[in-house]
Length: 550
Image (cartoon, helix red, strand yellow):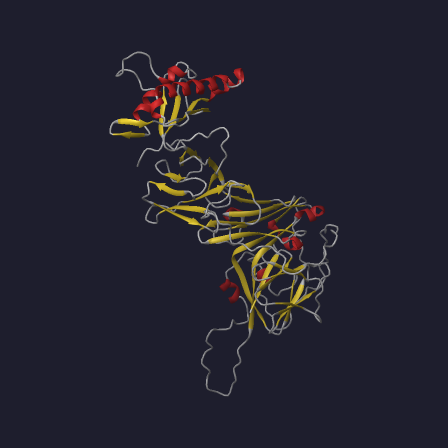
């Protein structure tokens, strides 16, 4: 592998701000003196023909002991560091005038805590670049282990050809404390300018696999399966805002639904007074499901479960592709017609509407199976605070986010964060699409109720536990208390679709189409005059986004 960064430490320097002491030792004892900056540049030319150098490197970074740099800044506002860079630039231009090839000589002086007294760290090479004073950033590079928390690493400038990223202490142009592959591996980024997408490669190539996800807009680098462990690193090379994209885009926007209004929405109502927690009398009668409808709720498990688990917990059989052969007797068999209802997303409420209740934050942790779990098992968590700010948290830290966005905490699972439509923005911050939707069956011809106290579709109500909601008073209350009535709506499957009736005057219901695009706000819907929800469309009630399928 070629050497992309020349890295040397000059030792026993009496004065680290003395350019002559760093550039060349006095005298002609060539074989007895220790190599200094001029010797290093001669021994490692940028280009050469045979043994003769034809070009030399012109961008050099010097790292001095941090204490020396701090003293210079305190006493002279960094004058000695500026004089050192200017003096070395003059010496460089004088001694290598015929090897510069018209390039500008640039020196940068920084401080580091890893050097002792009298030591100077020198870096130059193909992957070392110092921008011009007026040069704008083209890309910003950041790394992540879980797609939730991104750590910025370095910028890339239009004239910067190569970037080498590696572990802290390695011979890379930019070191990252979050590098997972060890000191011998490096990430090489080739930049051919604003009109071409960057090229990403691992060095050495053996043992690593690199792929690009156009939907998410980042590269995924992982160790090969035959190696020990399964380490993954995500690399995002984001183009600076305002810079036009090249002909072939390298960072396509995530494929998320656009929150556009399909039909004219009714005029927004004036903001009502925030709701407060109201204690219910224990003697009040719970609303039961109609006869023949079986509950699919498991009180001991309020986490997300798979499609098959929900179907098995439902007493109504699912229609088979090929019905069994009839038995020859006098009985007549008629198949049971069923419809399927799925929880596909969670509507994140605006907690600022409920400050009077003492609500402080909403935290939704997901485990590796992308099911709601306890905090200790979580690989990614989504948080809404009392100021309606969205955050994502993981073992890597916590970061502010905004919709639209997508997250890939584990391979094969994607959680999408979609913006709330303008007609829903008064109540909701965003829609959090579930990586693994939860579904159950509903019979045709029976009218069922959905709400906090309704047993129908209880298996889809995964936010009934109080542990997801943080309140100042410490009193327990589930997320369902925010926006979901005891009896929210009723529904009945029909040949044309689903007939929706609004059961509570305070319950907000929203109709979304099959792509989660806003259609209408359901204001007037009764059992006598129900609202028709087409098959495959969605209904938002409280924190739940339900899809009604045939």
